[in-house]
Length: 284
Image (cartoon, rainbow, N blue to C red):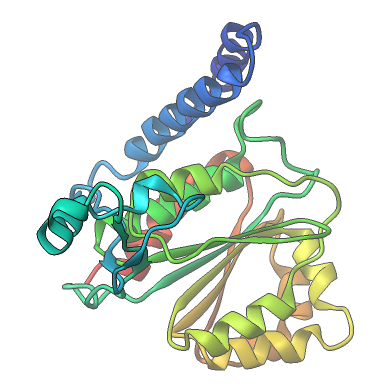
């Protein structure tokens, strides 16, 4: 597990990029922070087989006439020249790209949905090592290296951010480095909607004692139980000093065969615990 010097590395990244003009500092900082987290993830996943990242799958749509103001990159010049002949330069054709659903994982690994708590109790991962963000990165990389698809939900007290299904490790890493801050309000409405949209996915909630407060709210437990029944497995992966209160609060959902409670006592153990959880969930 990273030692106490890790936050200093992120501080160094901040100090060497903050003086750059324009928006260059943000882009360079994001790239350096992402590389730093990738190194930490690889330390935890050294025993897992890796596969090259795959690009997002796309299909081209039906060609249409390109008009002034449309995105020039959408022009399909090969098709235009073949079909328009000498009019190609004045009458180009465009074709948009739309996502194609890839075939199921060769290894039968389920879709993985990660709910990452980014409340103010945890630091901005670009400024200080965020153990929960690292855990999400480990789980995401594990699934993607098994050729599964991953969706992330970053939440705090308002406006959760939901990613599309991701198939590329770098894209997932960048998304999971997002940060909202503030209080914690778990998005049970989003959990309900996504579990209806994609039943049988493997869902992992990464949070701490705040989740126990959230699930005690009116209607929350019922929503959690319904989502659990629509999931391959739903795991509450929580940073807690002990699990007694968690088992009391989560009593109704703990009776569900598709629910698991995983408690990590020390935040410093979160990365390694995520690697162990990944192996338990994804290894055959």
